Length: 144
Image (cartoon, rainbow, N blue to C red; front, top):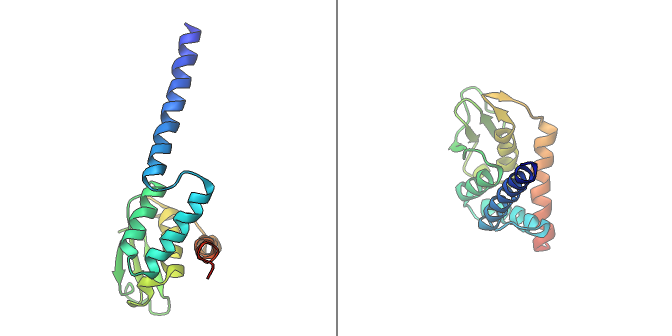
């Protein structure tokens, strides 16, 4: 009986891992080199004015809902170039140029990742690190 229980537990673990690997392959990610390629692709999509597609892929990768995207800042907020509102899961950008700025989009997406139940659990410093990591990987990958 114990042998059967161990077999079932092992099978369940390997089945779960196999599903995860299939999902990563579906997204085009299987190894750490592929993660770098994924990060570079995300930045490339944003620069190439396909921000919605980039957000969809990021959301699939991180298993979160895709945030909405809106040009125009929330009322009374004119100094920032980007802002994330957790209550309606929306990334606001100041203008159409900011819509294709990977630093702004990735920074605000980090806030989307770190917000659960409209409670924010991230910091500006970590949001900046998240965005810089993707951008640095893009420059390394494309040799720009």
